Length: 286
Image 1 (cartoon, rainbow, N blue to C red):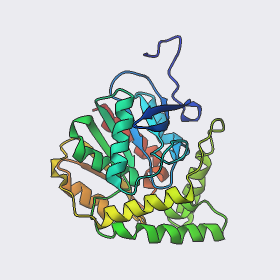
Image 2 (tube, rainbow, N blue to C red):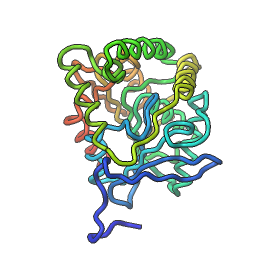
Image 3 (cartoon, rainbow, N blue to C red):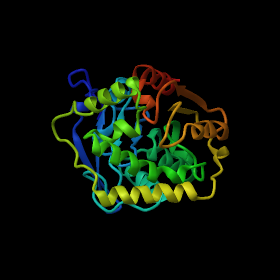
C-alpha cells in the first residue's frame, strides 16, 4: 500500500513500527519507514547490533525519500533461531527475509559485519541488488580481518572498567573529538523509547565473532564481478576493520567511490553523519 497525503509516511526511525515476518522457519524482526514504492533500501547491521543500533540521523535522512527497512539477523534481538557461524549463511538468511517481503530488487546499506554479509549476498544473488553502500567493512580474507575478535574483547573490557558503552571505544577515537562524538552517538541511539529491541545474547555475539574470524581467514573472493554502483566509506583510523581494507574494497570493486573521513574511527559515518547522510542520499538518488 502506498502512503497517501492523508497518511504521510513515517520518516522518523524513533517512531517506526516494530514488525515480524516468517521466512524459512525464522521469525525476522524488522522496522520500516519512509515512502513506499520504488526500490527499498535494506540496512545490514553490525556485529552485536540490534534494530536499536542504527543512527537515526542517517536513517531519517534516507527515509525522507526512500522506503527504508532494517532487520535483526537470525538469532539476534527479537528475531528467532540461532546465529549462523558463517557470513555466507547470514547472507542466505538476509535473502530469505527480503524474498519473504516480496522484493526482487533492493539497494543495500551495510555497515561492518553487515558489509561482509552484503558482499556474500551480492556474490550469490547479483540480480537482487541495484546499489551498494559499504561502510566500515572489508573483503573476505582481507589483511588482519581475523584480528577483529581480539580488538573487540579488549575494548569491551576497557569500556567495562570505565562504565562506558563499548561502542565509544570500538567506533570512535579516544581523543577529545572522538569522545564527544561517541557520547553524542550513544545518546542518539536512545531517542527511541517505545518498543525497544531485545539486546543480543552473549552466545549470539560470540558466534558472530567466530563467523567474522572465519571470513577473515577465508580465501579471498573475486569482487570484480560486482558491477553495481558502490559507495565505500570509513574513518581514517578504523581499529576494528582497518581503514586500508576500505581502500582494498575500492580497488577491487570497479568504478566504486571512496570517502574517508579525517580524525575518525570505525564509526566515521556516525561521527560525520551531517556530511555522510547527504552523500548517501545523493548516491542513492542518481
